[in-house]
Image (cartoon, rainbow, N blue to C red; front, side, top):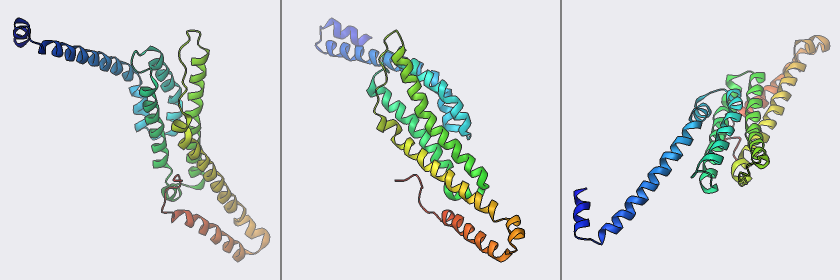
Length: 226
């Protein structure tokens, strides 16, 4: 403060520049404080997304997360701009993508779970990927139908949903593959051996089915890569 008084006393031209910088910093501080206040409202949902191991828990959380994002979009003075909001939404989409990628590792999936368990994991992953888009669309519709005339979400779908849509298709393919393997094991079981009397033939078929499974166990690339 003494320096400021001195500058004022000598009518220094530097004082004007200092005051401009001071006002700018105060503006940045107010903006950062406001952003922090609003982002804090969705912190626990983001922690759930980042830390929970259950896809179903994340699915159940998504409506609350979207409601929080809607509140930020409609109430925040600084975060309700595409250039701010799209990167936030993209980070959430990427976190969902990473969670699915980490869980649906084909070798771990097949070696650590039964076929039915693996299929259920893939199904929940698919539901999560689809629900992300559904909740976005539901929230966008609420904004469009709100009588207070809030600006709606017109974010580029390629950024938010291109990868998640593709990954949901891969999960669907995995579900079908796992169902087919399960059906083979069910068909060519003990009952088939008894009915046909061809125990060796049934065992050979089961060996071929097991070889199909081994093919996936030897997969050395990420199945979600294009």
